Image 1 (cartoon, one colour):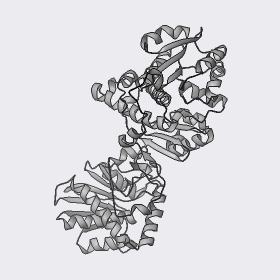
Image 2 (tube, rainbow, N blue to C red):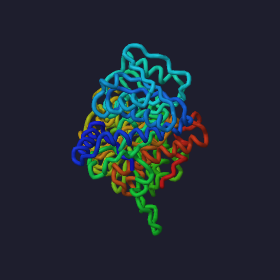
Image 3 (cartoon, rainbow, N blue to C red):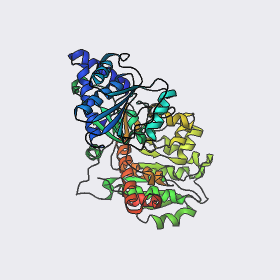
Image 4 (cartoon, rainbow, N blue to C red):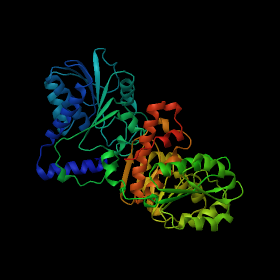
Length: 495
């Protein structure tokens, strides 16, 4: 399992380890530099010339140590520094002075940034580490622009300079890395956008910190070997009732496809039975599109209305899970109809129009609930701007999960799953999934998994992971531009 760590926790844990064991901090820096040079050697020819761009702190110290090791391996090092070696403090200063003693070509960039030497075959970015949260400007901004415009492979030390290690946020500009070598544990910002896109290939390397000194909380990055053990068991001596019955409350005039996609995904995720509560105009479309599901008409008009409430309450009796919202419509009439379902203790997923109505009218949800907003829906639920959500997705997902006492799955290229103190990020999927109806498929998958007995947070994790895998599978067959939500649904393979 990959579990991230915040920059602050990493710093505190590293200091505690060094103070508690007496382990030389200079040796940690040497281990970090060795990892950087190993990565560098996979991108450039042996004995070639590499530009090392080093800041004045410990990240720059890592870069100076890496430049020295590269020279000791027979390579040539061009070194740009933001401070003279005599101005650099602690281990960084020691390594800068050692590098100078080795005869490296060093240039201090106070006000003018030269062109990158023509003979350079690669660049090591060691300007700033994971703690940076301010915008880049002046000489540093110009350096970053030259790095990004070089066309050379770039190895970033710990994190691409300019990326906030805690949030992945970029204030002004940041280095685009080919590969990032980070130490001990990945940082949150390696997986949150735009940091994830700028990180390139991520290499996590051990630098000697003993595991018993690391008790820091982090965020789980979902991987298949973590997901498979929490999949619901499927005994051979079973029948359709063994795997649960999902009630789907979705669809309205012009949005019947959302109900069909959601219901189809319920069944593709392994639920034994599915019933759609629908309008009469939607009935024939649903019975044709999802022939393996049952359909029950609860309204004769173009949307589910308040008068449908008694029928919905009757239908939810005995159901294992609910999926509420895709294509449902946004009228108060519909909200009055679904309110008993929203407030029920039945395991459920609330999505799309049901989230809009929940944000507009307020209310409580049962503990066994998964909310699945995208950034816009999240902003509405939290009464903030979309940019606020994009800049701090983890914090807002945790906040909403706490406020609503439920599980929140915040959809995006990196999806956040939060419930209580538990946090996970899903990084499966691709741009092929940026298509209408993709979220409806995810809603059905999570509801189907809860019907089989998964706890809400487990169902959200499993659903997000395999939803992304389905998108990747569809893209591999059709190409990114041709994939539809239907293709994603038909590509679901769980376990």
